[in-house]
Amino acid sequence: MSAEQASAWGASGDHCPVMNNYGSPSRLFVKGEGAELWDREGKRHLDFLCGLAVTGLGHAHPVVTDAIARQADTLTHTSNLFANELQAPVAQALNRLLDAGSGQVLFQNSGAEANEAAIKLVRKYQGRGRHVMVSALRSFHGRTMATLAATGQPEKHEPFQPLPDGFRHVVWNDPDELERSLGPEVGGVLLEPVQGEGGVNPADDSYLRAVREICDDRGILLVIDEIQTGLGRTGGWFGYQSSGIRPDIVTIAKGVANGMPVGAMWARDEVAEAFKPGDHGSTYAGQPLALAAALATITELERIDAPGLAREKESTIRSLLGEVDGIAHVRGRGLLLGIELAESARRGRTAPEIARACLDRGLILNGVTPTALRIAPPFIVSDQQLSEGVAVIASVLHDHTEES
Ligand SMILES: *Cc1c(COP(=O)(O)O)cnc(C)c1O
Image (tube, rainbow, N blue to C red; front, side, top):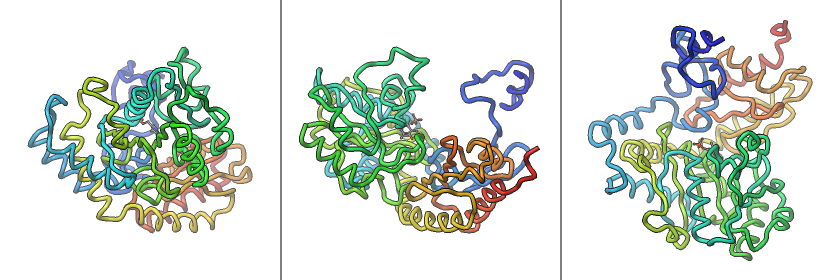
C-alpha cells in the first residue's frame, strides 16, 4: 500500500514521503496548456475543474507566465517591512471591480487566511462581547481553526474539538432563520454568494438583500466570501453584484492569480481602519512575485471580459447538458455549475464514482455531493472542448458495459 502510494507521488521505495492528507492521488500531472493537462504517461485530459476554480485563464497562460518570469528575474520578496510596486495597483483593480464604494485591501496567501483576517477584523471593529460570527449550514470557509469553526459542516469539526468559540450556523437562504439567530453578541455575518463546496447552492438575490437590511438595522458587518465565486466566475465580477448589495468586507483568493497563492481581504474604508499596525501580518503576503501574477491575471480577465465569457459558456453548457438523459437539473451560475444526477443515470453509483469514471475517460470534474457533479471550466474553454467534455459525461452515464 505504501509503495503504491509512494509511486502515485512519483517516489520509489516502500515509504511514501508525502502525508496521506488528500488520499492516494489518482493522477500525476506534468504539463498543462489552456484547458488541457497531460499526466506522466502522456495521456491528455480536459480540465473542467481548474484546480477548484483557480486557473480561469487556463494552464500556462503566456501573459501570466511572462509576468511571473519577469518578476522572478527582478524582485521576488522583500517582506511587509517595505512597500513594493505591486500591492497598490492590485488593490486598486480589486477596489474598482468590487464596485462597492471606497475600500482598502490586505493581502494574504490563501482563502482561509483571507477569511481568518476578516474574522479578526470584525472582532477588532465590533469589540469584545460583539464577537460572534454567524454563517450558514453547508458553507465552506477554510481549514484553519477559526475558518473551520465558521464552516457550517459539523462533521468536519468533530476531530478537532474544541474549536475557537464565537461561531454559529443557520439554515441557508432563509432570512427569517438568520434574523432569529441574532443577538447583541453578533458582530458579523459571513456568507458565500454561491456555496461551492456545499454543493453549488446559489443564494437568492432577495436573500442577500434581506440579510443586508437586517445587518444594517443592527450594525452587523456583512462579510461576503468570494473566494470561489469571485473574478468573473459566476457571470459578474463578483457573485454578490447580481443582488445589488454592498458588503462591508469581501474575501478573495482562488481565481485572482491563476494559480499563484494570493488571498485578499477587502473592507470598506471605515471598517478597514479598525486594523492598526501590528494587528495582523504575514511574512509572504503581498510579495511581488505572487502579485505580479495577480496583476497580469486581473488585466487579462478584464481584456477577455471574463464575466461575459462565463455567461456565454454557461448557456452553451446548459444546452449541451439538456441533451443528456439522466440529469435531474443543473444549478449554479456562470462557470460554477452543479449537475444533479437522476438515480436512473447513477444506477447505484455515487457522483464521486462517476467523476472517477469521467477521469478515466480524460475529463476532470468532481463529485461535490453524493448525487451531484461540479464543473468549473476555464473562461478560455472552446465550444469544441465543451462538447467533448459533455460527451464524456453522457458516455459515463449511459455506458452499461463498464460495470463488472
Ligand atoms: C476554497 C475556499 C476557501 C478556502 O481557501 P483556501 O485557499 O483553500 O484556504 C474558503 N472559502 C471558500 C468559499 C472556498 O471555496
